[in-house]
Length: 485
Image (tube, rainbow, N blue to C red; front, side, top):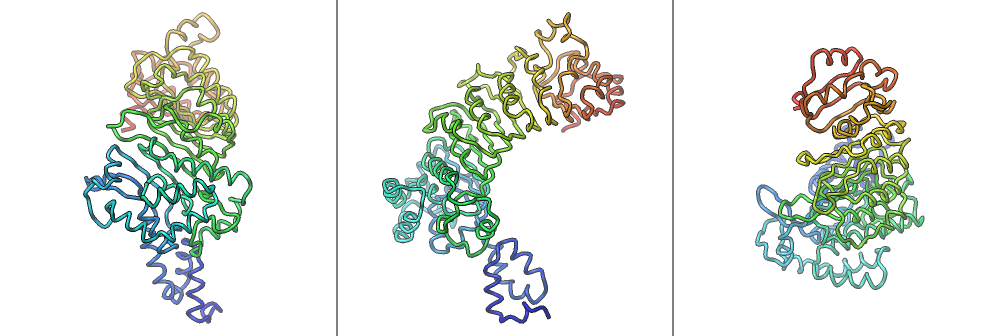
């Protein structure tokens, strides 16, 4: 019999209580005796994981009904049972136009997940002492802001409440803010303060022993309770987007700035992002030095100079996607050649995937300076996937160069980087345009882009059988729009 099975059952249960989530799962599979001892803790762990792994703050559409989730509910759960804090890995904060109505008690919807405003205030009063203790321990608040937080949280203000909440969740991996550009100022300021403290060297967030402590079941309080820990030290993904069709404004691009200060962050995602007023200015981007490797912006209209600041603050970007949305805010500021120049300047050796397109319903001509755009592609050393609009490959400017060296019939293959493996073209083609791009490509593929294996057409162009056979013979698969459905 292994020595561990000779231990008293109380000691074995104490060992089980010290294990992290994944270690508990693995430990109970060791043998029948250990599984029997760990069955009750494992069942509780799985139940808590289902309930708390994703936390909702704000108004959400669930089962066809709008439900309001106040962050104070989770805050009070943590005060009553500190072990709850270790379970959340994803935070979703969504504020719609009627969130204010919910916050002041006009949303009359009562069930076990939704608590009325009066009931929430009663909960806050009941846990006044615990809330005060949490605020006193929060290293990210000065005396003045701490007093302000106490007043606002006791009045159940959702922004202040969720700002305190994120300091208490040691295993949070993803944060998703939706339709809340005007209601999350305190949360964003808290993220900025956490990042600033972490970068001042107060604790090594990458230390393996720290990760073990964070994941253990005895990590029952905020990370601030132990020296060397910082809140959000395991956050990998930050997202800001606008999904409510009733809200016509964009989320603010500058609100991404606080995320850049977090040492652990690896990816940013934005949808319907613009350049409205923000409490964060461009110098936050300039001062940051982030480890982010992936950036995606969908249906957005971001000032090109702002993108420059962002790209210059990230030293090792590997994936970049920007879909221009053509909003009224910056409709004239779609300059892909400029964006590509910034990428070349800062990421020519690291970028592996480039996706630079317009929204499908934008039909304005964008062929200006396309040769400059295309020639810059050749500079990238590791770029394997390219997705661009066809306007980058066709247009009057390219046609006007027909008498020059640039005007060769096999122009396009000479502009692709050596490492490229996949080329995707995002817009519909006019007559003969797809053939023009493919002409000369199979013959020069081995010399110019030997790793190219596929060309993807989002729409179904007219390509003759002979061209398809020549591409297949050169090891290039043509994927047409109808084949992608």
